[in-house]
Length: 175
Image (cartoon, rainbow, N blue to C red; front, side, top):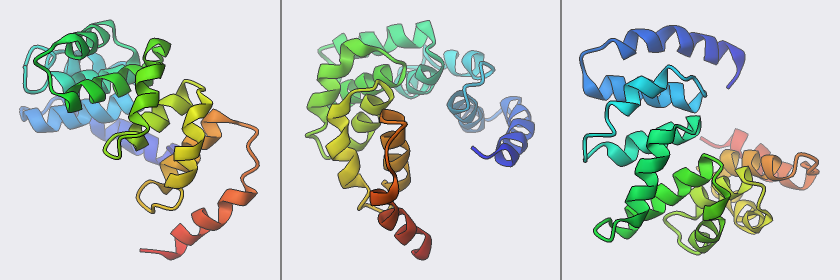
């Protein structure tokens, strides 16, 4: 995030954390976790015990590589009663946390249109080049374009961006 957005968010979020409303606390925790701020951990960890919120809280704590969240994500993946969608989300979160053991499962998710964008981003973060083709395809989808470009850059910091610029510049002219 640009520095000005980070500083504005970092001033706003502590006020939200103290809110009595659960949705506001969860949103504040989510934003802090995505920024890599450890202040998110106690907020989100308290929701790991709430079955309806466990997966969402663990997904956000994965950005911090939180041990309790990783254990919850492993439990979700290993529970036969858990839906395939929830197992996929847990797998992606483990990839975000840097767990290389989930790479084969993330690669399989590249074929699933519901999860391939998230799986490709996690694979790029892990340095797995199998995500490249999916990420290149996502450059044509306006809502996925920016994250796909960022993930391609994470995958290959020396990537020549010139062939990708036309799609990104087209985004600037769209609504």
